[in-house]
Length: 310
View 1 (cartoon, helix red, strand yellow):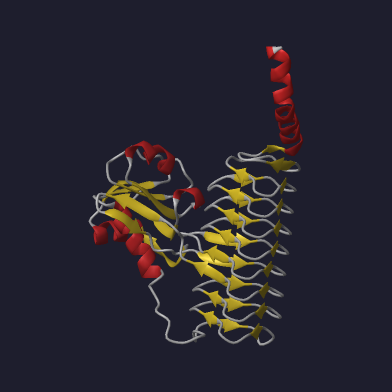
View 2: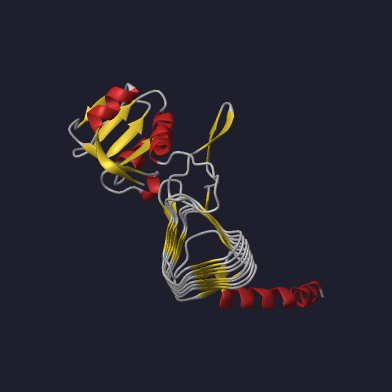
């Protein structure tokens, strides 16, 4: 998430009673979780074993709960509760909105778009030309819907990230400050749920087609011209390359990458990053040709055991 105006580090330190290590003249231009950060962003860590990863990330401003060595070109802000500072900044730039009208007055909808009855559109949503939003779709705040997009009944775009910070008092919800972005010529089936990112974007690439009852987790990126069949679930922050095909009930765990031009056969589970240009099968997935040989070997196992015992 980018700020509308850069925030000086000194201002952050003074406001939240934080000590400064490093270049106090820097400014923050955005805020993001560790896997999505860019130069100028704020990120945080409150677990010492992850300090190094946070400091060595692309982030410019790192919120920590203990002092650490700061590399050139960055600044560390030290306080008791980095998460609270991080979450407060998200809340201020993405304040909670409670719906009191079907289509928020700040939404920008192209005159050629078709919006059927029962559609709910939140604040700061943008919908492009010739898109067709069918009955009872919900498009949440800051979502961007491109041109020639079709979204079938009951789907939800930009629902909150399923993301919690675990602590002594239970699970504390992060404010979702990211967006759901549906690029041009995408087709979304009925009853899909596409979460917004925690502070980055969830992106469905141009020309991709989704069947019904697909779930896309927070911050995931689906490439261009992908085919996603019914009941597929993609975990948060995973990346699916261009022109991939995921058959029915495929599961993809969080924070992995599937290379372009990959096919994953039905009921498979992708538990690690996999190369593109191949067909995979099974749980956990292996190349389909290997899985077929394994199944054939298993079928022959009883006969081989009988021979061995004989």
